[in-house]
Image (tube, rainbow, N blue to C red; front, side, top):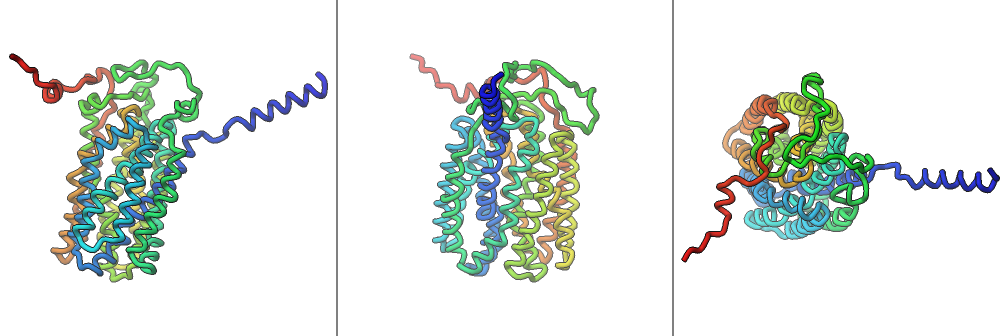
Length: 467
């Protein structure tokens, strides 16, 4: 071979190596999701705690009234969840994110002009809750569920570090509020959502097949796909694995009606209806509890909340990775138990010196639970109708999601140790959730019918006209 041909061949090989992507595109979507999640959480999710104390001091609103804002906004988000989930499945994550984040930015702009409790409720319900519901984690989780299968646990864990990073930086938002006022801080939040989050949605894609890629970066092959009617093959049976190992049989893509007819759907719904009290009380009541019980300064109390969320990142990453290998039900049960223990210990805080220790015990299992919902949902029901099924599961969460922050706020307003009592009761319910989740089983043959039930068809059928 001539020297010229040899050089040309070497150049061609090197070019192909450089041309071949080294990073699966799904991880870019995860990175974008982390940034968007961090911004939305630091300003809206955990950011509510940064607004809580200034509003209470300026307007004299009670704990119950302020807790009701979060409770009702979660109610609205839960009611809209099935529709929002269906829309994400139907139109794709990117379009929904642009719409939702634009609404969310407008909500923060309106928030800066709020002067009454009624206005606050309207802004939260009509703009911030709706925008967050359709523009942040729901479409991102749908995208990640479609891009990853074997590595879905670690991908969801990384994605949910966004809310951890956002929550851990809430103290910075609190410092901003303290220096320029909550009204101007709300305007800054709107500009960040519009100027950073909305442009980043350009990189979000619904499914890897749209870019000629396979799930997890695998090459696209002509494999028999699950139709939701039966299982094409079982490469593993429960008897071939130990009780603590993950079930690696093929993942099924169930229809919405099939999912609703399974026992697994309702067990997951009940489990998360119990757990739904946790996010409500952590985002709303941790900072006020520490500020009032330990007589802390505003920024110090919000800083403790930031430390709580920062510590939870360890759980989000570690247990998201572990979920790719262990039985998810068993892992969730263990996390629920330790989360209950952590919350009970946290309710016994009487000195600032023990706060970091108790916060770590509570926050790590709490963080580990965050990505599990999306992981187990995809594991049980597949990715084809991920958004719609997830929205329906969230709809069942509504009672606890709405009631928990309002109820704990009411106890704190009514009883000398109301915060502590409320925390202890919710900690006890984690044991119930830990037991219930173990009863869930992945749907297997024979699968339920894919068609709606007769009563549904009869209700929505057009009435016949007879002469």
